Image (cartoon, rainbow, N blue to C red; front, side):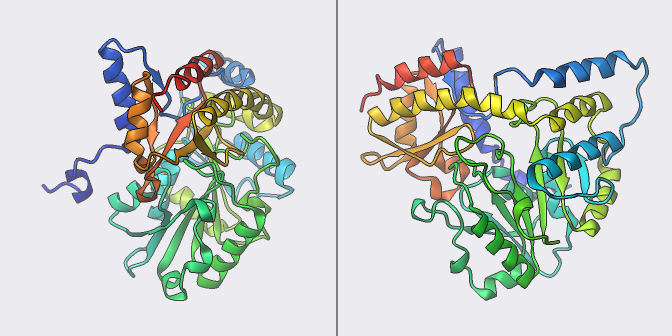
Length: 384
């Protein structure tokens, strides 16, 4: 029995490589600060925990959760969209729950027939799951170059009509992981117009929209109504719920949502009902992400100041809990990584996110304030 060719390459999920490096150093007795994975260490929104516990205590038996999500959860998501984006989404026809956005993103390509040779367009620096999904499903994909000069967003004008003809899915992640770039509303509307013209589906990954330090980042929800987008929103970062695994998929294209519901049924069940009870509280409240951001802003400033004092150039930083930076005297990501490892700090080289990441690194700051302060002190000791 032959394995999927992608799996026989024995390629490891790139972000795990550097998390494992931190564990190896720790085993050697090094006092390691691991700033590789975007897994918030601050408390989950308390109302989520309380609702989850109450739901568990209220039932002595168990039952399969609906694969599309409970009526109450879908209505909470719809209310959130109405409050924040002035958009009325039908909770029964235009929203489906998901077990965190990662699995939803991975499975999205299964919606479509790829027998005609269509391709998935992926930014050349991106969340690895976009490329992993395409490769494991044996779907052709095209990297779209990203550069700092283009604000680390694909240059839509550089894509020819011939290329657009083969595009079936276009991944857009804004605010962008790893670079923190933010697509403005004009950019998103232009992309929607192109999707309608060339008949492809925009897959908008908006995991970090609620963590921002200036104006609210535009959402695909803010563009003119269109059936050519699917939105993936997560509670993992917004509400510090990475371990809960609950998010939502939205689209004005009811055929797409209906297909997702049919696809989800044989794949598995929805998030556990007690998790959904907590998620409902998260979707109902818009204040706690703002409260979390107050702490993030302080941590960001502390680390960014330390980096800039050592000559690093920090790009963007208007949203998310990442710092994306480079140094004019160091052209290789691994050499920057080595400098930090000398001080017991493990970060992620830009090349882990794609071919255009050379010369950059990513550092997370979704750790405690104490860890950030300790990190800033060590940055000051970098041999540069």
